[in-house]
Amino acid sequence: MDWQAIETAPKDGAHILGWDGLEMTTVRWITFRDRGWWELVSSGSYAEESSWEPTHWMPLPEPPTDRRT
Image: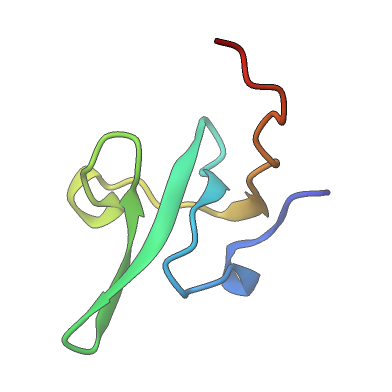
């Protein structure tokens, strides 16, 4: 799948891969009291707090199916 404009990203809390022009990370859209923002899933901080704002997104790949023990 190709990168898509962030305006087309799902805003249902699903984890997606976000890109800000310099780096990519896993993010999700959070809505609280009629406000919304991108949460950086890996670090637990908010894009609003860290001034990280994605410009593009793509779905996360499916996890591996083989289970190593």
